[in-house]
Length: 336
Image (cartoon, rainbow, N blue to C red; front, side):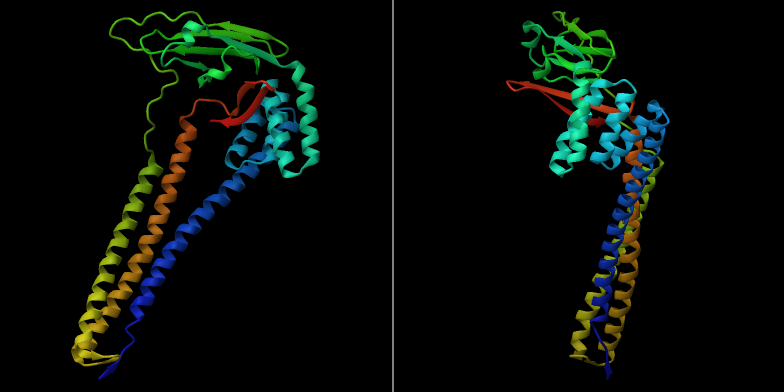
């Protein structure tokens, strides 16, 4: 008769699952830490470039830092950068957002600084009004795009601040030919107006092209590698599951020749086989969990890089405005 501990394979299986979970958590934490470090480095480089008077190079770095790890301090630096490069509307919207965020965070110093800059810039802002006639506004499915971004109905026929430069407006509707117009806006104190004409009927058998349409991005090396590694990890987890199931079966078979932990020859052999299969289950589960976590990380990193590379829009701020009885409100967000 032999004395065995049948719970060993159970402990091994639990350890395997725990290690797999730790692998996933560690991968996520590592990615977050790397992102924070990248954002901090970009922020420091952007500040140095801004101090050196190179706003054109500083603003994209600050914008990318804000995208990776948003913070009120980075947004304040980005607003100052936009002011330095002459994008007064973006700067003003940034200062307005910083003022609101600093108030919520209890940072009176930042709130006052941002308020002062926003007030100083307000009279200098250039504006643009996109006038959409009632006949066009009443069309089913009509859309207005300004510089590739949808302009909501509430911003039609409303004077809103805008950065100086050339701006493109596109208007489309089902069954109509898309109209495209350009307007040049001065850097300061300009009041530009763009009139949208009635839309012509589209030629028979054609449909208006959707503005700003893009082909779907393809997977790159990192994405395919991530899929392959994750697949290998899933296979490992499956094999581990097979051995775990086998161990359970052997444990059940041993009960025919065992009383408690006291077993005859057949029961001893069955329990030894159960322990062996449990150990194999542990090995495959650990390896599978690590591979699955690593593959998922590779895929996510690859998609983030592809998304950034596919976007043709320069780093910077995106302005949106709303009009109501209390006046015009502004919101500022980054777009890539």
